Image (tube, rainbow, N blue to C red):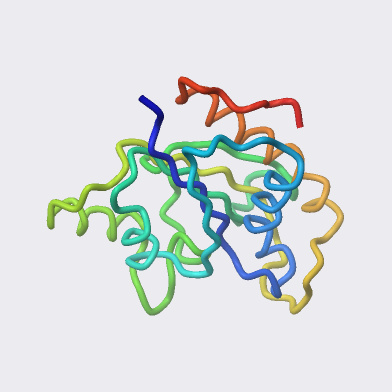
Length: 166
């Protein structure tokens, strides 16, 4: 049986490096053969809205910018949602909403069918509030690496592995 996976590019495509999640997923659509069993979406909201979008899937892969200050700009990070730093900003949390972690707890308490596995592919960024449709050079250079990481995660959990040579 094929995995029931959703791939979501997070961010705002008109806020420069904040749009890296969208750019990575667009890159994958253009340069790889994604399995038909994978749903693709692009979101600018996190917290409860993101949790609601995950309902009904066995696995989710989220791609977003992250600001930890602990890695060089353009570093590609991969971790499970349980390892997610509890950051106050970004699309995995929002000022007028709640963090993804709290939203997931709320969903579980309401018996929502949420993914057993949520993997986050994040690109370390710095400038996520500058109006621009372009990524800075270090973030743009990270797009193919982040795309390859997404494909690797999908291949690990699929009986019908995607072509990881992108």
